[in-house]
Image (cartoon, rainbow, N blue to C red; front, side, top):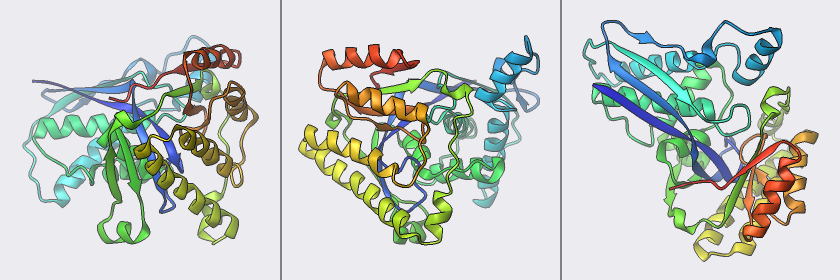
Length: 331
């Protein structure tokens, strides 16, 4: 039995990119890019490394670029961590797994280090393959928590629930991470929205940003935990953008959606430091007449465009700064 599963890239549309602040968000799955996992029964449990997991390089420069883009260990640790967390979940839930071994491998087309959640997609696809192999059903609201725990507890990756929720639910989802709800049930309120409500969207990502040391280190969470008024007020305002975005989607109010995308990003700049290269993505897109905000923490942007003429301008102008433009395929 050959099992093949898939999980897609994601883009945050409104709200904080990966909410850990009890806020609200709207995100979409981006089916243009995905991570695939293949699993089949075998005598021993084997994780098959892929080309990006190699320890052989053409040169020192090749090694440098590979590490900058893929990290030191490639995708194999993601599979190991996901398998471990799956086994622990089954043990906690007193689910007895049959003594069946398997071989597993992954592949991904999601651009790395540009804020499209490539790592979590590999983990989601791995959980889906394991559930199918062992005929185990993990409740959908619980699955994002397990994916997040895999990254945070096993691999030390700082992240939030938004990315994992949209990759598990897919489509377009409004998420409310209200503190009382989170404390009571351990997960937020997740409302799938009809993707046909979405306006004309584009995504642009910097094709070489991931090879640079472009990560911006901000102590926003520490400031939030300390109760800094600017951070608290800004996070509340960003959450309210997502609430207004939901209403504007139902009303099909394109002007309001455009304004909210821009406001979402402008609010972030009040508390986050933005690199020049990330800012250039925003400035270039807005100069074309489109709205623009980050899909995640940087490296790629999302916004609305008016017509094909504006989309063509985005293609041309963003290419000048090494950015590729796509129309996200959601459903």
